[in-house]
Length: 102
Image (cartoon, rainbow, N blue to C red; front, top):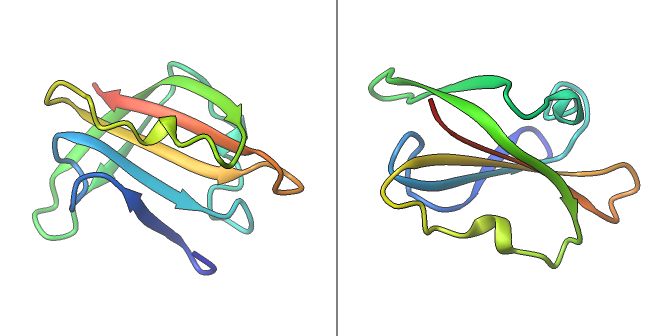
């Protein structure tokens, strides 16, 4: 995590059914501007092997205690979801952005 982001929980690979959770520090260019993203904004992930691109739209954004793991829930009814997790300044809380396939 010191140099990038990592798969924290969920499906083995990106762009599969389930909640793919990505975690990383918010420094340099790594999730640093995640706090500027808002509900309704979109991003995409590209699978390295197949080059498949999947677009996602943020549907929820919130701050929680580091011990709150509810954002990792895998009950997605077969849909593709991504959860981006980073720390807020000071590291006492976590910023969570949840997105679904568009």
